[in-house]
Image (cartoon, rainbow, N blue to C red):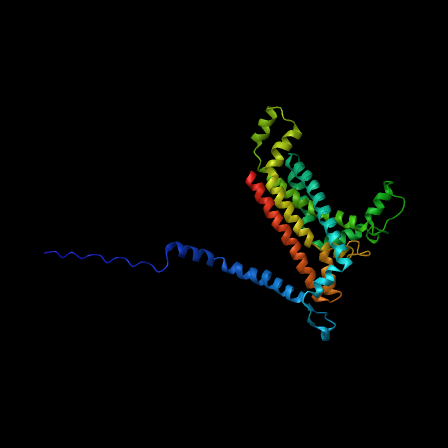
Length: 309
């Protein structure tokens, strides 16, 4: 007689398979989260803490907690408001011109011509060169006595006497913006060129058959399809430029008479020249808040653009 053995019911796992998948997935993020914590979150916390103290390096006896004293000083500081205005001129003046010339360069590089690969490679050179080196190059080009720019403009008859570009409060900001435009054009050119190459040729051919001209094709095909790339590239470049202090720091140091002083360079000056780390911490926190505000707007605009596609 055969005895039937009933199978024991399988024990229910303590953690469901879905939960285990989530735990395993999030565990892969732990190293990145720890790096982010160590390199971003902790410095922000330390900067906020530093901004609440009177912390002048050569006055250790005056070190004390002052709460929002540095922020009150910041609100009453006319140089800070000047640097904020200079930052807006610096950022939007640079990015708008970089975008316009970068878009033009991308449209040219999209065309077929002899040596296109070489030209595309050379286009990247201003972006590859370190910012400090770019500053030194343009500082030499703007030099009033032996600079190439003055010599060239005098030779072609556009000027009769030499100009101290970086020493004039009226010309210095335009000079550093022009140098920054030269360095930033390749970023937009490469980004937009990649977007242009992703646009199907059939769309242009169909539009041309329907009688659409160059301007109409650009307006109704190129711009709509490149809109997400334009938004992301422009917003990214604005954030980078707002925090980019190398060029101004090397070329003018924020002068003359704070004419090129932006908030980033003013923060560096307070920290490493004046050695007032408490006030520099307050400036850095305000700069962070400005960037966070812009990022929120940027994310909303990006979301809206993606929804339209």
